[in-house]
Length: 233
Ligand SMILES: [Zn+2]
Image 1: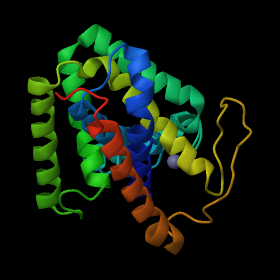
Image 2 (image 1 turned 30 degrees about the vertical axis):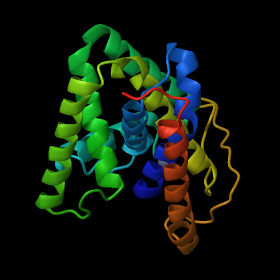
Image 3 (image 1 turned 180 degrees about the vertical axis):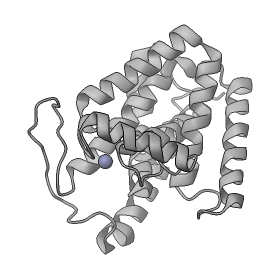
Image 4 (image 1 turned 45 degrees about the vertical axis):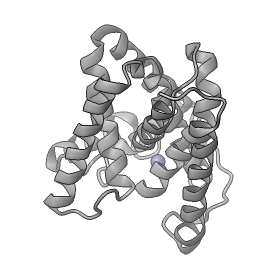
C-alpha cells in the first residue's frame, strides 16, 4: 500500500500544489519547487501509516522505527485511528510550520531529507527491495536532494508545511476509497468510506490505478511546472 499512497501524494501535489499554494504563500512556485513538492508530498503521504508496525515508515530504520510505529499505533488507538483524521492533517501541517518558524533551515533540510527518503523508498526509486544497497542509494539521493534544496531552493520553508498537509490528505483520500474507511472527524468514531477499491494490493490497483496515477502525475507536472505561465528558476 505504501507505493500507491506515495503515488497518491505525488498526484495530489502535482494537481493542486501549483494552483493552490501561490495564493497561500503570495508567489508562484518555481518548476524546481513543484518537482520537489511532488516528491515531498509523496513522502508525507506515508506518515499516517506510522500507526502500523509494517509500513514504509516502520521500515525506515529497522527495529528503532518499528518500535516507534508500534508506540504511535498504541497511542493513537490502533491502525487507521487518530493519524487518519483531518485533525492529524492539520496537526502535521501546523507542526511543520512551527518547526520551520522556530528552528529554520536545519528543520527544513531535515524534513526534506526524511520525506525524500520515504518517497524514494515507497516509489521504488531508484532501487527497490530491502537490501542495504537500495537503502543506501535512497539515503544518498535524499541527502543530495536536501543539499540541492539548500543551494537552489531557499524559499522551500515557506510552502513545505502545505506539501506535508497535502500528502497527509492524499493518504486519507486513498484510505477513504478502500474498505474500513477512515475516522475523518476523529475523536468522533464514525468512519467514512466510499469503496471504489475493494482490497488494497489487488489486481485492479496494480494493473490499472498505479499506471494511471503515474501518467496523470506526469501530465499534471508538465502543466504545473513547465507551462509558460510560471517563471523558470
Ligand atoms: Zn492508512
